Length: 162
Image (cartoon, rainbow, N blue to C red; front, side, top):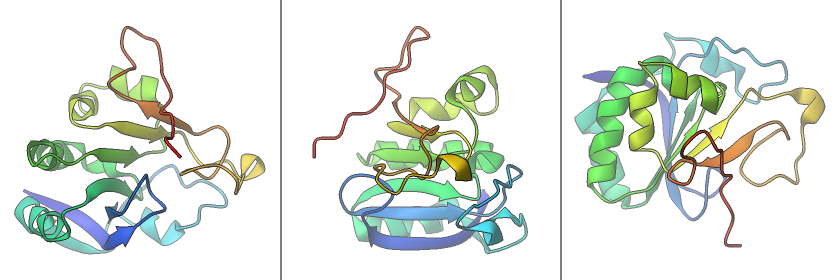
């Protein structure tokens, strides 16, 4: 099973707490005006990588993982397989997506992924709501959702320990 990957960054601190392996996936239909990475919209950009190749890189780094893009959910089925294996290795997973959490829950292709993800950073980037003081997101409409605590229709935002 392959995923289209733009790049993998080892040891970044901008996509979640602590040093993380951030994987940027190709393809996005949200096309948010003011996006910091419009080259990621192209579904043909980047390189095909197998789940095992990506897992090997994650294992070498031995850090928690952030998934970004583009929008990783456009590769949801293979991504779910990857996330299950990442979670089995004991790593935490943050997922950045332009979709709203509620829409992910309602989508039978996307929803299974949530059982492996710790935090979802949801919502499109809105340039009028851009705020550089925000932690781990670009605009104030985006939420840091603690998936495990968000049960029974109540969304609970992740709280920083900083």
